[in-house]
Length: 307
Image 1: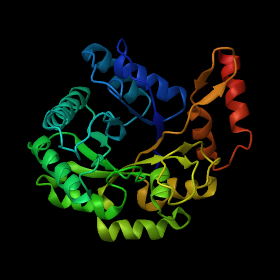
Image 2: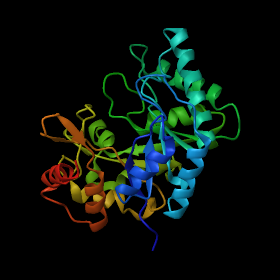
Image 3: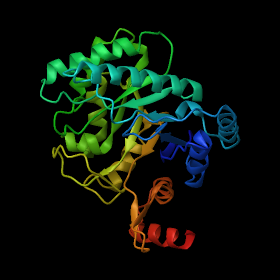
Image 4: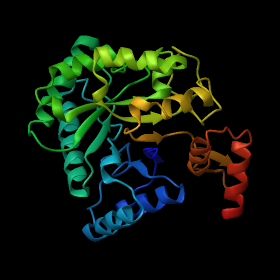
């Protein structure tokens, strides 16, 4: 029986880089993880420490974390769908190129990308802009794979349905370097029915091809289906529900696909108004296939004790 590939979003710090990410993932009993190589909302990037990266890879090997299952998330500031301002459009292209280079240095071969928002240009123009940008970015045959994330359809977001993702892939010359990241909250909020995930997968297979699924973001949703709002919820506390998410996570067709949690941090009233990661507890629930009705209280108690 193949091992479940489960992890979460983790930190990546200026001083410890990938080593910090691995240690955090292990503290959650995860065997994969996802991270930003710098703050997602700005362009500040620190030099990659080769020594710390080597130590991180050694630690991964010692704990059976396959680096091929580890994922980088591209920063939010990249928008390939809008070329109204040519300088900003070219900046997005060049910045994503840099992120791919950083991924290569770190030895990570998957980078998740929000396709972009057309911001008034219209769907067709926006999709063409994404295709044009990716063909520039993916000029080389070899390199990390870009995983286009399925989006909730908030505002003018593109990638809100399988057809839009398919249109982008169809326009890419180097198709081997483009795959897909499913996001359960986004799928729900975009209008897909997750109560029958096999049917959804069949639809994806017919439109795009199931072999194109490279990773899955596992999130419950605060919103009802088709809300187009994109508000993640902790596992089992949202409208998708624990049982539906478990069926998705353990789907036989996706057993080799890494699953990544991006659920909200939990607030602790300790006079500092701080929030703490839920991932250790959510991964435990998922592995046990049993919902923890006291999830939030247990997380709060754990971090109060750990402070």
